[in-house]
Length: 519
Image 1 (cartoon, rainbow, N blue to C red):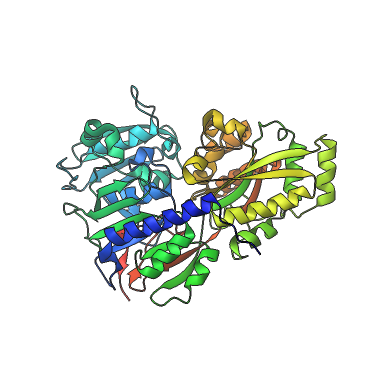
Image 2: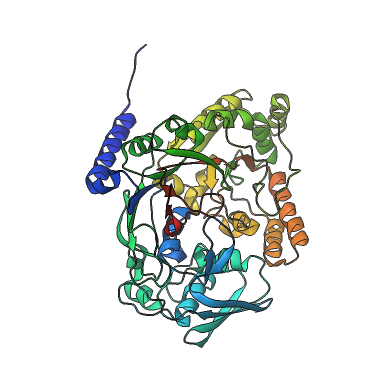
């Protein structure tokens, strides 16, 4: 047998060596035996924007929740909220919430005490149309129904909605879109605030370097409980093999891995490996505007030609649970009776013939990671059996995540996507509304009935009625045949035994400031 190494593999090896060298030279203290007061954690997607209004995902958001305070925040390892910057938060009517800040909440870098004006500025810049040439927030949906924030005193104010909001506290007030920035800092720093954020929370960002990560240091002016670790180095390592080496060598102390990547580490001394349920969701999507995929019969044929169980066996060693609808089982409104599609080659061929689709050639875009690569190879073989030629296009993170944006997204055929969830159905549903076409709705699926159900569910206070709306919305997605649901994954935590990690259940929203030291 002849072994060949291509240019990509050579470059990947060089990058691995370079990154480990950088970790070793820059974080020598972190390689010492613990417990320690400094730790290094791995992220698998680069940090991009640390301004809460313009964050690009959970990776940025996890830093934001350690740098900025909110009126309320999640308790450690819980989705239950507790007071943070606020001394009191009170819902006085279905559309009015009053708040009173604790005195002495101090922003870093000399920007002074937090006031109600900062709260007003923070919430309105996300939830209301931008002023002047300011960029609108991608997360404006988190503050849907916001009318205004009234300042009633230096430390007091009222959040006023246009109509009731079911998830106001969980998604807006208590989560990253509820982070309170310094109005003075944002107005003075402009775009620089996205890389040098000014907050009043437990940590400050002392360094941020693209393709490397960030360094968090205790904020000595923070008015709350002192976090356990003086410094937390956040290291971007995209390659699971590099992560394996960094964990073994002691260069990093905490990582979340796929079952496949974590298995070799289960027997390594000095590491703890535990599995945690996930609320991420992974699916194969289809561009409903693309020629060849506009016909619903073609999309139905692709769905029937694929075998989700085979794809999961290849991508996750069979250890990730199958997902049959948008919402994972842990989320309110999970459609437990969603159809479980079984492979049917004969019916898939018939649908293609009825659609007049012969010799169909399609491209499948994936993130260049082993789980997606393995699933894509299985998909290619399965689709070949029904007469569809599939080209797999594996892209690195930067290129991949911009592929569905704007007019570029019109060129997509098929793609495998992974989004992070939260413990609220509307947060997960929001990316598929018509207004997200050209942004995160890569299927370019625009359905006014879905949009209406999304809006109705967002304001439905009655739990049972909200569940009905959410399930009805998922049925419309199923009817479109634009989505082949794959898995809500399983997270495998790998860390030093003396680290006690913390996260909102689902292990996507890490609580760095609540990481503890213990046996």
